[in-house]
Amino acid sequence: MNNTTPTRPYCDYSFFLFSKLYDAKFKPEYEIDLQYEDICTEFGKYCDSEFNDDKINEYDCIVDYLKSIDTK
Image (cartoon, rainbow, N blue to C red):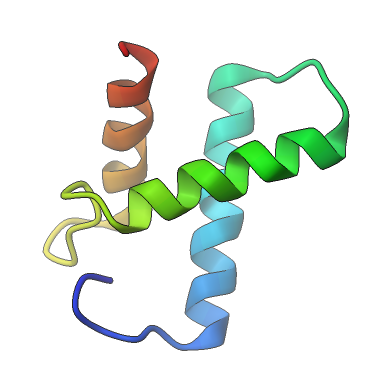
């Protein structure tokens, strides 16, 4: 999370959760390799954003982030 170095299993879970929520919200209709690039890009932005707050559960943080990019 912010200002810490998460362990690999945490990063894997965090990315998995983000990718599932991203897919559920946006339902991309294009090749999986292009979806992966987009998800990696958005996940990086999420990790660096103020939405990535270790005082709030991660699910809610990701949902709030995805809502914010939906309105851009």
